[in-house]
Each structure stands twice: as C-alpha cells, then as structure tokens.
Length: 168
Image 1 (cartoon, rainbow, N blue to C red):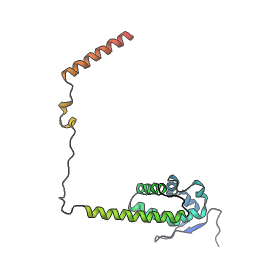
Image 2 (cartoon, rainbow, N blue to C red; image 1 turned 30 degrees about the vertical axis):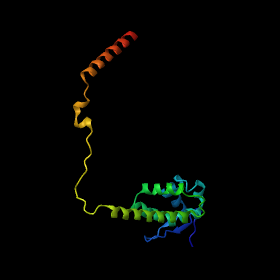
Image 3 (tube, rainbow, N blue to C red; image 1 turned 135 degrees about the vertical axis):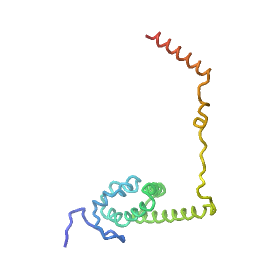
Image 4 (cartoon, rainbow, N blue to C red; image 1 turned 90 degrees about the vertical axis):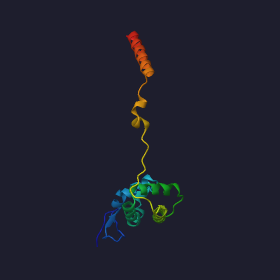
C-alpha cells in the first residue's frame, strides 16, 4: 500500500494515451490553471481545492491539450474569456467547462464546414489581387517641396536663427 504526503493524492489521467499520474501540484502548475485564473473562472482559493483541481487535470486539461493542438492557444484564451463573460452562477465548474468546450468545438467545425462550402468552385488558381501602391512610392516627385515651399522654409530658418541669436 502506497502512502502520499498531504496534497499528493493522485488521479489517473483519463485519455487514450498511456496513463499518467497527476498530482495536485501538477494541476496547480498547469498553464491551463493559469489561463482559468486569468479568465477569472478559477479563483486563487480554488487552486487549493484538491478535488476540483484533480478533476480539472483529469477531465478538462487533456481536452484543452487536444484543442490547442488542433486550433491554437489564442483561440482557447478567447474561448475562456467568452465563457467568463457569458457565465453566471456556475455550480459545477468541471462540467460547465467541458460542455462549453464541446459546444465551442461544434461551432468551430460548423464554421469550417460553412467556409469550405461558401468558397467559389471554379476559382482561378494563382490569381492574386494586387494592392494599390501609395502615391509617395509610385510618384515620388509629387511630394517634393515646391519652390515657394523651399523659399518659405529658408525664411523660417533665417527667422529661427535670428531669434536664437538674439537669445544668446
């Protein structure tokens, strides 16, 4: 029979990958814990809740790994900000986050499908729309000082020189 120090209870990670033992310390130090804290979905006091943290590490964090691998960490951050902005009175955080991620992934898959279907079928490949070149590049002479501008500039420089000379 093995024994653990306080705070080192373990839980088996439920994924198809080889079983990995997750400790409370692992769950607390997970970057996803930091994201949840940053999104105000997890409070600092919740980090000490052993049952909650081990549940997150076992059920939610592996799904976040898969999500980040498929999409990106930035999209996960935006999702968590959205969840916080649209959530009130969450009773079971683990279940709530699980359902929210599942619904979000369905929506993303639906958007990807819509994007593929809405693309024109007989689009010419290799056609690139050119951007308009700004005037200061395509017509460099247009921005040169005019003779009057040059004279005004000289007059201003002479006036400044006189003022500076009077100040000395």
